[in-house]
Image (cartoon, rainbow, N blue to C red):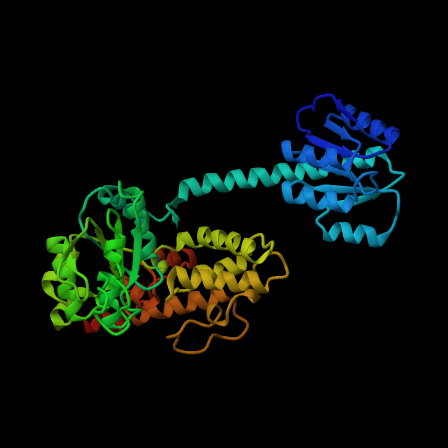
Length: 470
């Protein structure tokens, strides 16, 4: 049996009521309908399971005692079909054991008969308002991601925006791109963005770490081998270049390959063909090559460890990925992104970062870059019990006094005061040379100027020093 009760007024929501007692069902639905909810009332568990498969509700009121099915079984089915819809249990048996079991199975709350319809209505309003807030948060997050997420690269930094523009410019060319940057800056994300912005996006993107394998294995990995070419070559194997045909190959840590492989790679870039290990016939491929390194290849060329002709072949277009310390405005965005990622992964509900903890994140130099930040947030989410990341959740290296201080920090000083004293000391020791001081502090000049202004730092005048200049 099924009844439909009215239409919802603005600001309310849709509610499914499942109860086998006709008087209880009808009176509850009439009350809720009068209060502005859109209500569907069902008598049996089977009707309820069919209903949740065809329609999404804002809330469900479910009697645990039904004639055809156990209420807990229906609850499980509802949570499987509509995991985000809160289910409130109705029971005539004020058994704490039943209520606890229902909550363990995912019930939002429970009420016992007899109940006050007005209290039920207030409970539903609270549930649905919470649902609306969640949807608004999801919407705002999606809008934020649309603004600041470029193919998985989270940033609002001006330096990164210039890289995004360059990605769009070079994506549909065949030119080789060399991506340079420190470890952990996200060089592979840049390579993937280039690939997926290009007309090759429907073809393979193949990534190879050139430092992960010894020379002989890397040659086979890149170019494949023929059956019998060495002891373990039981069959012919296609290499990464063949697998990437029509698409893109990303050679990470390109500065680590041997002189022999450098020569082989140069031939591929020049002739668009190669030989498998032990093979005689050339293999032609249409592959776009992207490479990355955290080494200074120009210096490697001068030292004679990297071929100059290969360097120029790779260095057609260069993208320098800035370290995290030079784009600290991205830290709050990245922290929020990683919190959501690890909330999902570990089943946690961390809401954000406290102001004090965020200040510590902003003051850290991040030698491990974005990867280090990701690890810090992962740790903080795992050990978190407060619902928000506090300084106590951060690793010790984030709250140490900066290295290079001439003396220990005075007792009873805040971290901000410690930073102010340290910056003043570095500036004084370097005669207020902004570029050199910024390099020592591990920040860019713009950040240093901002901190000078924030702390009201002024240059100390030493007449003896000025006199010595004449």
